[in-house]
Length: 183
Image (cartoon, rainbow, N blue to C red; front, side, top):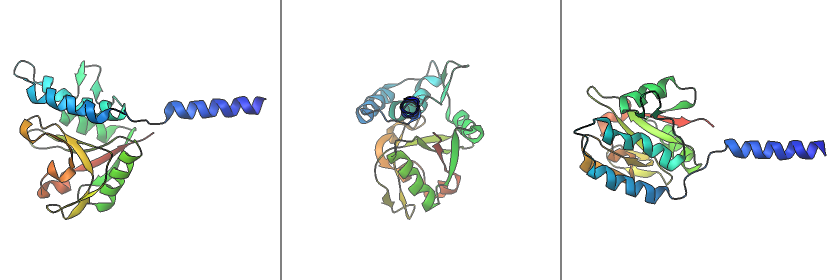
């Protein structure tokens, strides 16, 4: 009897910590993209930036990019620094590394959160890797994962369900870091 209770408790506890994905992530991201396109951050710079960090929670149910001490979602440069110093996230590789790109797509397909991030001179950019398939990118000459991006400085470029190479140029590959969340 004691063994049965132990097995049940172990099964229950592993379920608690297993990663799951929002079953409605596609429609939720579509709604967020529409809201983002109408967002005006003239009064509050962080207003439109929240969609980038919130997308992680919408898809993967992980709220790591919410800065409770600031009462808002992190800006991309803050996310970049957070990822480099977090024990919950691991560097999978750079954008020019086919194994890292494959690993990113495999993580996403296993319902594990994955992001691609680049820190720029003025501001950075973060892209959420989504479940899907790797596809050939003519500009990168690699197979790249499916993704979603909220371009805060070029809203018209924002998208859901496009290749990662749509968010970054060929010359950005070496600066793009792929991170997967540990579970």
